[in-house]
Length: 244
Ligand SMILES: [Zn+2]
Image (cartoon, rainbow, N blue to C red; front, top):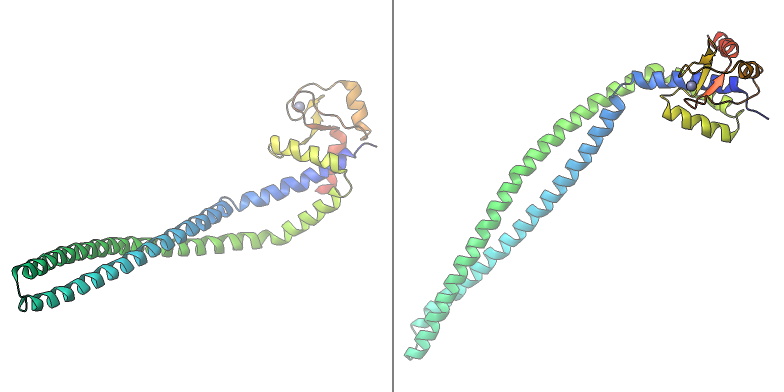
């Protein structure tokens, strides 16, 4: 059994109306998606910066503690210098003090470096948070806009989708697959009426015998030039009249 082409044509009418509704939403769904994506990008950047900042803080604290410990050691060693009994001991202690002092300088420099890195990161973090705030408010506005546009058409959209489902149920799955494939390739137009003996999509002449067959609405024929499904002009006009 052949699929009823007029059903397919009716289905296309629904799909075209749904496409129109979608078009009225314009770029909004895309904009909202884009803003949401950018929002999650910024969120993960903020997380990264915060983790890095925490690492620098911990390392800075560690370096400061180590410098303090060395400092205490120096104080003890300096006191010991007064109690030395010979040059050998004196030299050993002085050497240790000098090494500890070099260590202190190194640790304090490290702490400073971590401190300035952490401060730089704090500036980036502020900047990112500002970006996040403005993104949030823009996303909020766009979502509200999209919601109100969608609301206006919601009822119509639901009705059309319901109608579409009911029609689609009466068409074979194979045919629906073919229909969808052509529709995607041909800007939403998969079924075209014959106009003045030619395909309404690409204007390629259709043989008169075929037009006669198509008028019976029980043959599926694809335009040999553009691949769309052909429907007799009269049948299409009938569907258009009912749909109006
Ligand atoms: Zn064609």
